[in-house]
Image (tube, rainbow, N blue to C red; front, side, top):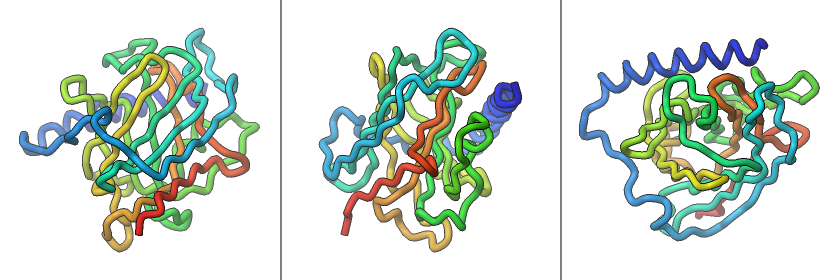
Length: 227
């Protein structure tokens, strides 16, 4: 019940924030072009999450099975394929029961001593270990833009908008295209080097249903091998 209450509060805060941000961002703010299906990629890696480990109470629960990740050929974007054990729907706003919502949290410098505690810890079932990941950036599925098919990328400490990630929904998957430029080193301000740690807490508006994790510390580490 605690997790569900926190998620509802998070939704309210996210909706309020999106209103504030939309009023403060210039109308010509750039969205990501081209779309993910137009990109090739390299340095692919796959991460697996156990099937059947969802922990919600509603009949429909998102269950993450795997995440595939690579860098596009121009070394400009992270491309991330998230696979589920059930059908996927884009969030429709309001309190729909099937739209995919939640957070993708990113440690841009792969340093747990910088950044903030992961929201994953807030929603994790009691028997699961906590993650020590220091979150620098958060991508909010709650704020899906139906017109441009994007999600906002926020810097965690000051909740500053740093860019947009494209998202495309498949039958049982979704694909994110995240610009490296939206994830600079939070300490030095230098461009992202193509390496990040990340984790998910995803579900529906009524409740979180799955946390993407690896044992024992629930952190995925992607290294693009960019020089």
